[in-house]
Picture 1 (cartoon, rainbow, N blue to C red):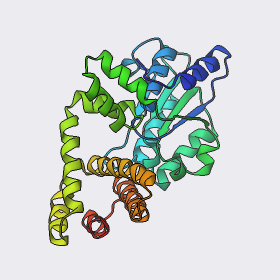
Picture 2: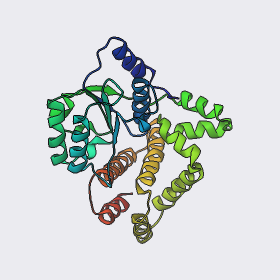
Picture 3: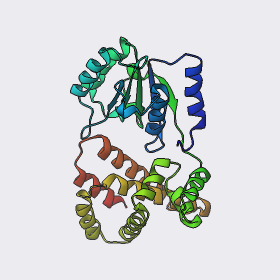
Amino acid sequence: MILGHKKQWDFLIRMVNNKKIPHALLFSGQERLGKKKVAIEFSRFLLGGEPFSHSDFIFVEPKGNLISISQIRDLIWRLSLKSFSAPFKIALLDKVHLMPADSQNCFLKTLEEPKNSLLILITEHPELLFSTITSRCQTIKFLPVKTEEIKNFLAEKGIEDKKAEKIAKISEGKPGEAIKILNFGKFEENEKQIEDLKKILNSPLHFKFKYAKNLIDEEKLSEVLKNWTFYLRRVFIRKVREKDPFLKKLKDNILLLEKINFLISTKNINKKLALEILMLEL
């Protein structure tokens, strides 16, 4: 089941019906919107069965924090082989913004010399891709799903109305985030992370640095920073209505959180230094 993204899905099906499927599609939008879900369902539709058990389906995802050139070379080799039972091969590449320059250069050759295949690229940071890659793809943009749609989906799963509404708001239009909170019991964990932030905001610097030191080893550091960003955004909206004089500082903190989270997710940066800078500003 695909939650939301009806326009995107209808566009894809129209392409198939009109026999105008491009060589490469770029699914662009924030993480956990459901881009990969749509890509998998579209692959299932084209192949007539489960993609991950189909001989003509290739899935590439980052190993560690990058898609290496060896992965791209392997992909090119597999695409060079004849398809087994489908009219063409389908390659789904997740988080393509994690291809370093050498991987992108290597991948570009595949786009420049299209074979009998469909490439589906997924990214939340298209700006990190070479323009020569994006220009050779048909871009389909994904937007946040309406809160009401997510709430109704959760209600159908038997979630109590008040909790469903809160999870729908926390997910910020991201079905994947809502499902993750629902399936992995993240609701209480998210609430605790927000309470920790409230405590940090009212604590002396030595406490903040101590907290930052413990946070460095947090396996889900990115999720913690995202939850903090969500909370501060809600506070910002409320303060705008109240015309609070500290709006600029609040806005700067939100931007800093987003920047640090982006760097931690995409670059090999000094986490300790980044978190200490964050604590100095909070």
